[in-house]
Image (cartoon, rainbow, N blue to C red; front, side, top):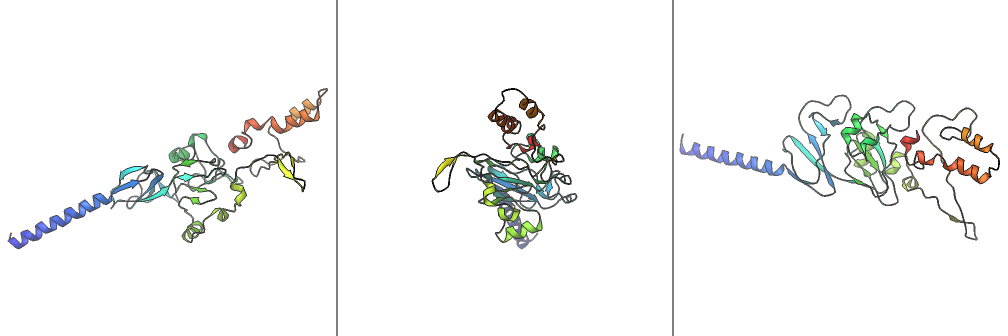
Length: 273
């Protein structure tokens, strides 16, 4: 080997070593304390069907997220994008839409939920428990701060929509900074916590008591001829009404309040159904 060839070989080895070093250093990701890392695999088996998330090492978005800290993912094989934890402001709620899971049954307006899934932070359990696509029955409560998979779920809050949309319609809106709660047919007041409290009425400003009338938009239809629904029907009300000395106030209390603990004042929609 000539001296020139040796120099070229040595130079090539140095260049290769530098490239390897740069690649390795670039493969470390610093995930902030309120961030998650969404991993996308560049090569591998193709995902089956229209599933946007890989569970078994296929190419595409991976089911497992990178949690806060310094993490390593070999850059030529993986790309990592950082996303914020979902945060619901005080006095507001977050509406969750699943982009993965089983199809929602025909006629249903929301997906069945299992309490084992937590605040949608356990994506694998959600899928294993038969989680369904579409609007989810539980909402995220005020002050929620959670690392939710940004491809598996979209979370709608008043300030912003968290997540990476899968459908072309929502992708285009996101690209033009127009993906907000209006895009999902929601009004601003629907993302506020419902408060039932005394309110001033009329010009006199007199404070009057208020009640809340609830209309369910999902569930079994009313029996023929009925104008109102109640869990278990009204048999207990009829029996109570037939007792001597029952006042209208007592009867009203039975009708309005006796079933509320079964669904936590309509906050547990899954139990209500």
